[in-house]
Image (cartoon, rainbow, N blue to C red; front, side, top):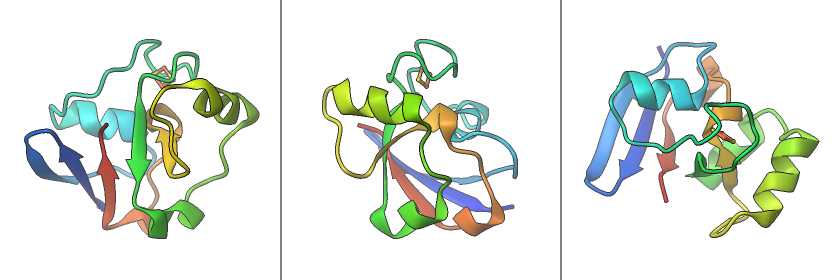
Length: 100
Ligand code: FES
């Protein structure tokens, strides 16, 4: 199981993720507070997270819909992604994710 580390307002939380789950599902299964206004439909942008830059090339490219959302949401950075659109793979073992 790939380890995913979340940086939350209360500190680091290490999780064991299931391959095939989304990052949003990993957060929910581990009781990590991550708002998701559209419940994973890639329509709201509220599940924005910051990915440690080393892991960005290991993620699937964002869809046009995700890219357009990331362009308009507040506090978006070059390493922003939507947690509901990231699917966990073995390659993501050790990835650090910051919740804004
Ligand atoms: S939950 Fe709405 S875009 Fe991810």
